[in-house]
Amino acid sequence: MILFSRIMLTKGIWIAVGSIVVIVILTLIVSWRLFKKKHPPNPSISDEETATSKVLVFKETGCQKMSIREIYAATNDLNALNFIGEGVAGKVYKGLLSNGCHVAIKHIKDGYGETFMREVASMSHIRHPNLVALLGFCKEEDECFLVYELSTNGNLSEWLFGKDKTLSWTQRLEIAIGSACGLWFLHTYPEGCIVHRDVKPTNILLGADLEAKLSDFGLSKVVDLGASFVSSEVRGTFGYVDPEYRQNHRVNAAGDVYSFGIVLLQLLSGKRAINMNLKKPMPLSKMCRMLTEGGALSNCADPKLEGEYSPEAFELALKLALSCLAHKQQRPKMAEVVASLEKALEISNRTMEMSAVTNAYSLTVN
Image (cartoon, rainbow, N blue to C red):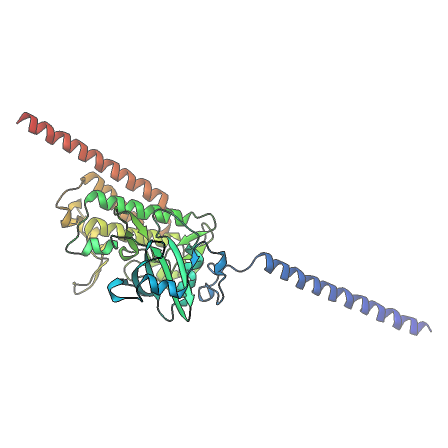
């Protein structure tokens, strides 16, 4: 009888323990499901290969979902006469929407669906004067389109390297300031630092008054402010990619600062990021350092400027550009870059005013 009681007691204990274990497991499952419901995965900040989920909830974005019929009507069936450019991810056409709005429409190539989804997820709800606004998107019948505001003066590359276009010294500084302001906004965005990852002249568009607008966010990455993300592979354009990023694959705002430094050197020198005409191709950063040895800063100036610039402002901008190319810890933040460029513009304007007064006085005396 005593043995039977002990067996029943032991059996009861095991039943109780088993019940507790089951309850704990069920509680954990319910809690996890509730957590996942309240905190759905953000496709713009997950791992590189899954950075954009196969399914994207477009209704939560801030831009308009458009039909493929509207896209083809706006571009006259993607007419070649409306073609204005082509990037890695697809061709771009001018378009006119039914509401009278002039737009640029990118037809995304097959195999670039991830780029399409990343840009919609990252940029559809963001607006800033120095960022090209994403106005709409279309995903229908296995085709993808992105609809942007139209920048009527093309891209910065066309103005720097085209034979029939010239930018004044003041215009170059203002373009640099606008581009820097756009990056500053992205890097300090409250919902997470947005790293562009492909800052270069072809991705800086120019509006009606030559105002700079950053474009093409297909490689952009959202990370926590002050943090970094380890990428599975190096993304970006040869000549603009941060050497430290090539080594450690860490995506962070400092990489954009480096790329901006190259662009600023191009605004000053009018030269390409890599001189491919030499037997041994030379990066622009190395070339500018060599040219400025001994203090001859004018050796770096774009001949198109014809000497029409403030030497003091030029020196400040050149030193700023080179500081952007230093080791990550020594690079300035974009807020500091904007402040320095605005100071350069102020110095330049003051120099021009003094020059105008001197010329007027000379004419009066003569």
